[in-house]
Length: 203
Image (cartoon, rainbow, N blue to C red; front, side, top):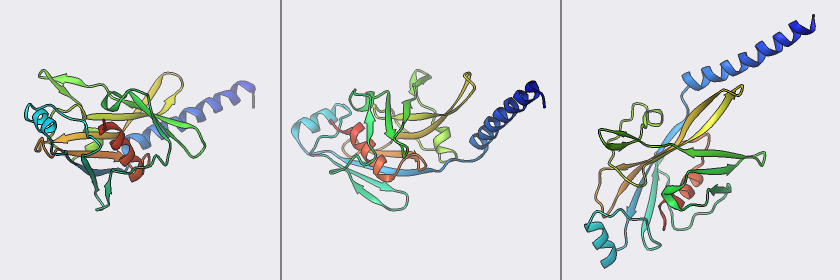
């Protein structure tokens, strides 16, 4: 075997591996799970006044935040520990552009916030990749978001993005707002989801 043919075979194997990964990414569904977040704001004059004027609030330490997962697991967000060392970019709450999670090999996976677009002059996020056939009507919110990961690269050119976490504000009472949470269970545990939600929604 000549040196040239050897390198050609290596090149072919390299791209075959990446095309197999691409096929898996496009045609095998990722394990998206769901949870419902209910927030019960504390009953105070300031809170009630702000809500009356449709000012969307972050949750204070007196607000109740309850996560109900699709398998009926309930987590109260009063005392959430950061077991998997998730770190945000330093800016507060819903303005975070990315966050990182420590992996088993002590490296970090970074998750980036997807930019919103505008549709008929209304801020719009495409949740199709996360929701699939589970269409959910949602209303505008400062908390609506999608985070994605860069799954792998083909050479130095093409990067495959994968939506792995999303928050959707469902139509509900402003005094008791409801949110649908979609997350990739290969990326996040329930405790991870609880910590992320607690961080993004708290003052």
